[in-house]
Picture 1: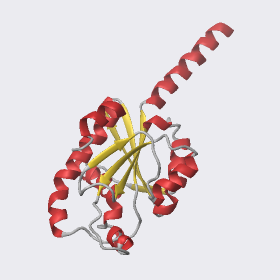
Picture 2: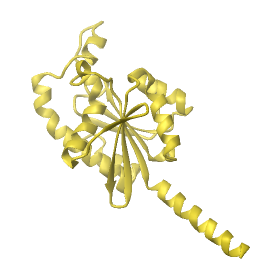
Picture 3: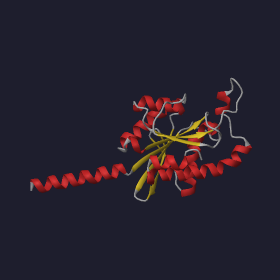
Picture 4: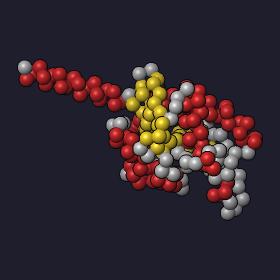
Length: 208
């Protein structure tokens, strides 16, 4: 009987571990509030909202953020928009990683990047925060620089001393016209990350 119970327990644990490996936390960084909704800094929120609209998903406010869940070929993708404001994003990320028992390699953080041309994509599995306060707080809370990040280029087309105004400014009409295609590409990237893994997704989407 003891041997049977041990095998049953071990099998249950294996199933739980397999289920954990099929869970992903996809985090879009941004600031809450209507005044930030269409700003360049909120591209993380915008990408997740676009994904949700395409797949008829609804976000619900839970602890430290708005969440929704998407099922994809046996994988469970948890989308998170932290409500802690950008500079404290790491608190929400750490909480939901821990609560859902999601391995760090299944985390993908979506953020804006001033150092990339508008609409360009760069995936990295590790690196510095690049001066981005949301990534800086994430790095501090996770105590590592080894986490997957999806940087979306917003360009650096601002005059000296106007960086904050630019980042928190709204998209131009020309940028808005081009965003739809870029958002669709971002949705495909997220699906690839869950289905094909980080390396293949980097090779497929970096530079596009």
